Image (cartoon, rainbow, N blue to C red; front, side, top):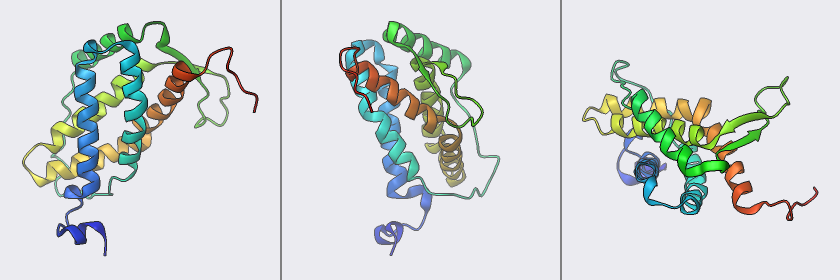
Length: 182
């Protein structure tokens, strides 16, 4: 017996996994929206903890079919994205920039410059759009919210969470006096 049958709800969009993801996504978005209230270290500590939770909860999102393809909307505007990015960029300061090797590119092994503010703002946009669409009253909105979020996780924000998590780990724990050879 699967979890939906045990809970008495056969609808994937109302499953425990979706509701758990919704809770974590909401916590992430609300915290970033008030990021100016946190110190840089408090924000890094929060992101260090919530990024893996978002990743895990997104992995567990069910595959969903849509009963109405037209019931999809995006809510975060370019101006809202830019405001969030600028706030995070100011907060992260000199720690915003990091380099990574994009393992998805087989022919590309040179480090790529990236921005924590950009990574976390992109994740914010995807999660905020998910939350707002999921809150719409029609079941088709919820189906599309889950389906779109799962697709964005697989193709975009999942990887951003991983590379940003590595950068935060380096900021919090790795110093030039504490480098181990592997």
